[in-house]
Every structure is written in C-alpha cells, then in structure tokens.
Amino acid sequence: MDLSAIAAALLDWFGQSARALPWRKSYDPYQVWLSEIMLQQTQMDRAVGYFERFLGRFPDVSALAAADEEEVLKLWEGLGYYSRARNLLACARELDSHHGGRLPDDPAALAKLPGIGPYTAGAIAAIAYGRDVPAVDANVERVFARLFDLDLPPKEPKTHAFIVKTAQDLIPPGRARELNQALMELGALVCLPKRPRCSECPVSAFCEAFRLDLVFERPVPAKAVDYIPMDVASGLLLREGMIYIQKRPAQGVWAGLWEFPGGTVESGETPAEAVVREFREETGLDVAVTSKLAVVRHGYTRYRVALHCYALTSLSGAAEPALHAAQEGRWVDLAGLDAFAFPAGHKKLIDRLGRDIRLDTLWG
Ligand code: SF4
Image (cartoon, rainbow, N blue to C red; front, top):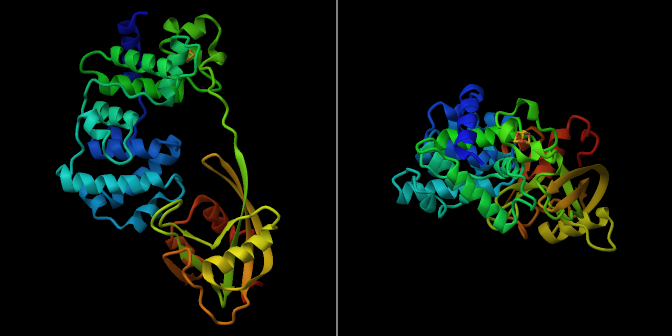
C-alpha cells in the first residue's frame, strides 16, 4: 500500500477539516496533556467545557501542582474515572518537583509519569512537541483495521504491533503533529464505529475494507465483556433540614470523594436491610428507613449498579455518626451538596433531589 499517498490525502483533508479546539490554538504541552487525559472515556463535546473551566482555574503545571485535591475532584465531577484526576494532580506535582514544571518531550520519559500510558505519551510527544512518533488510540485502531482489512481484533498483540509500526511508517518527516491528529479526527468524524461515512472519506481509494465490502465486519470485535449486575444501598440520614455525608478514605475506590453512607447488598438481604446494616457498620448509628427515594442506575467499570436510595431517620437520639469507614463527616443542607465531589451514582441522585424527589415531608 502506498503509505505516502495515504499520508498526503490525510494531511490535505486535516488542513481543511480540523475542528477549532481550544488546545489547538497554541499546542502548549500542558494543554495538550490535559486535553488528552480528559478525552479518555469522554466525548469531545463534553470535554471542551471541562477543559476550559479547568484551564481557567489551573492555567499551568505549577498552579495545578499547588491545588487542593478536593478542588480538583470537584472540577472533575461528572467526567467519571476519578483516578484520571488524581493522576493528573500527582503528575503535576512530580513535574513541578523533578522536571522544572515542564512535560518531557521524550515518549519513554512521559510514559513513566503517573496516568500517562503509551498512547498519551505518543500524543504529547507528537502533538505538543512535533516528535515523529505515533499515537494509537481506539479511533486509530478502527481506521487501520478497516484501511488494511485486519482480520483479528486490534488489541491482539501481533495486530496491535502492526498498527503501531504502520502508524509510525505513515508519518512524513516533521508532520507527526498533523498526521496523528488527522487519523484521530478521521476516526472521530468520518470512520465512525457504527455509521462510517465512506463517501466523504479522504482515504476511501486506499481502504481495503471498503473495496471488499467488509467495512461493517471491521474491526473484528474482541471477546465481549461480561457485565456484572450489582445492588448497592445508600442512605440519606436527615435531621432538621440537614443531610449527613462522609468523605471516603484516601485510598481505594472513589478515594477522597464524598458519599451518602451505604454499601453492597449482601446475599439474602433486601436493599432496605442492607442500608440499615451498612449505616450501623459505617457510623455506629441505628437508623430506620422512612422512605425509598429512588433506584439510580449507572455503570462502573464492569459493574452495572442499581443504587437503592433511602431517606433515613436516626434511632440513636442525638448521637453523632462515628467515622468507621470515612475520614470526615459533615451535615449539609440540600444546596450545600453542590460544593462537594460525589461518585457518579450519588451525583445522579443529588441532581434529582428537589426536582422529582422531594424531601420536604421527610426531615426528622
Ligand atoms: Fe473508514 Fe470508510 Fe474511510 Fe475505509 S473508506 S477508512 S471504512 S470511512
């Protein structure tokens, strides 16, 4: 296949079709890094707003390195996968202490930093610094699987190695910034997973899957992920217009985020029994369910979670909740919940409180 002709067609198309994205104004390494981390598992349209807010608050590595983790998590709220935000902060602190506040331009050095894998290392080196290295993400894998009619899943080691090598060979000297972005942009706008726009594609003349009418069979899917259903119960302990929230431990799942106490529903237990048991274990308080508020459904890695949410009243008089499973606890009013960062399921519940879930009649 004529790689130089493919590269020329891609570069020509990108020159005319590139979207005006905020980090493309200067290709500042900090901004490129931030955008790449945000775009992992997040759609472009949503990421742009978060990017601008984040950059407005933390304009460079030093500002981010000096940030309070809680503020970073709050700005990240809604993007999910909070380990990205924690790694971003850890990485900024490492850059500030050991790299003069600057991201390295070498992919191998970048890949040693927290939260930066081979794809992100390649993207920063190529897009921010113009190094002639590839950046292969899921979009690029899909484009290559079709362009070269690859008949094994793109993540299969030999197939992936072929894609990375070909992506490297495709780069005309000095054009990695544009070429990598052209491939990503093609995957995001034209070579779409379900409805590829082959009639608008700048490389359709070279595309083997298109020629062989195999576009919808490529890429070959990897083995399907088995999702695991999970029931979780969570309780809003209400007292005189206030709701009890607690801050999760500094390590482990959803570290440092705030939550309504609760946990997994165990075998043989109803969700209402689970929330009472969890509350006793986590806070030392005996509680009673006064109302079932909602069942909020959300995905978390391989889990499909049904979050059963209850309003609770204390049976332990004026006793304060203990911190058996948390680093801090607070009583806040409904409006005050907005100041804290919560995991996705709890955030969905908060968004509904006061809208279609009324607490007015339930305050103890
Ligand atoms: Fe993708 Fe279609 Fe272009 Fe081939 S011709 S690269 S399948 S959009």
